Image (tube, rainbow, N blue to C red; front, side):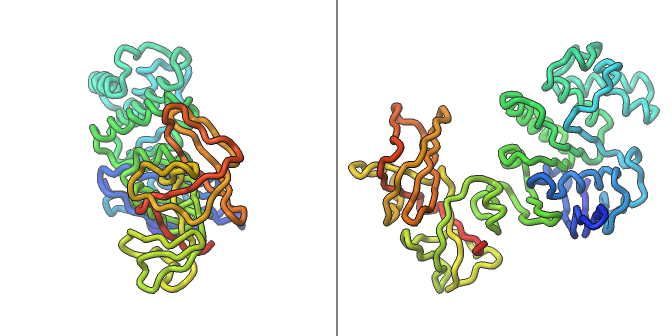
Length: 361
């Protein structure tokens, strides 16, 4: 099922929560809405679900408008952040609730509930109550309840935010597996960048009720169209410079660096100033007596001073200061317990294909 969102506007008094959002989800696509708190992503999801009726624009499923169609007649499955399970019902009763509301015969209902519980790895849990389950198991029940009705579109509202880090990872993999198996068109809201980057076919980053960036995760991470979208998807090491006349490189105080994108993003013009940036994982740091083993890395023409080092297990995140007080970060994988101490002077090198450019903010 394709889902079209056309020029949606939602206001709460003088506050514009959504300001002309237009998106199209292709059949079977896992599409993410990403952005900071208050950007409008949950408002958009609730509008699609039918919980918000007072909006301008249109929402269509396979070309048919959903205006005036109540939530229970849209045949959309919804997975909530807080699970929203009925504590007095068994797992079977919770999953069967939507089928019973649709007057599905009891025999078919039992079969479909069993299939849904098997799909989410909860076969044999049907007689338990939600209070007897872990958070991850409760979220699986909520997912089974949404899937059992065989929805036209699956809506997920920050479904993993209440889980610990290990469970979030496990549930991400489960959602990926189930989506590949069912091929249901899915609209997924989150503020977690890693969740979006690891699961999305495409995603939209929202800012102040508008679409700031739209595209595939890998493209948006490495070549975001704006500084806001670059910052939101991860740490940025930035330096201002001037784009060359042919648009192939940027001249900065730290050196001249080649661009490998096929085109310049909006607002970036040849021969004009822009912001060049790279990500911490593309940076290596080394002392003056050691050369980086990473072939092809280009060394900046300025030294840096290590300000802090945060040990993360498999890697260490270094924060360093360049001339002029500019702060950069480098994510360095652990090598035999090596550690650069705070205050030490270091050289900095960057992968030659790591650079991207955005308009001056």
